[in-house]
Length: 174
Image 1 (cartoon, rainbow, N blue to C red):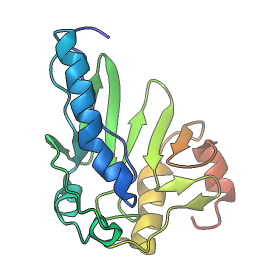
Image 2 (cartoon, rainbow, N blue to C red; image 1 turned 135 degrees about the vertical axis):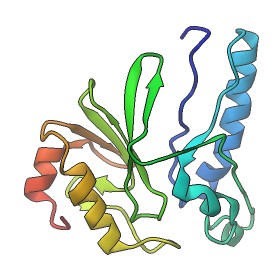
Image 3 (cartoon, rainbow, N blue to C red; image 1 turned 90 degrees about the vertical axis):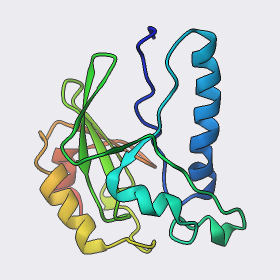
């Protein structure tokens, strides 16, 4: 990494309090490391529809786990926005359904997608969380992810990787 490098996103799974709270802990550790090397501070990025969710301990379920946690992102991303991570292009795809603010990250030059809990190998993410919706999730997969090249490798939040082509053929939910 060089001095201009930034951690562009802390990818997390919103339903687990540990992972929500881990965002700011990761940021603090990364900022300390960056400071030692004369780099810029790390930023937390999140989809713009996540803002209220991240700040509401009931919606993000942390209140129910006995440790209310809120996270404030430094930058809220819009659907279709493109990021540059040290010369690597990343396209932000709003993929609501698991939660209203679900976001996937497509790396066109690398031919892969990081989609959190939107799409799994022959399955999809849970939608029984506040703001979750199965019909919205299926629409996100069909309209946003299934339009990517079939050879795109999909890295979900859990489990094995897959491809868009495989999911178009075998995913029973979509």
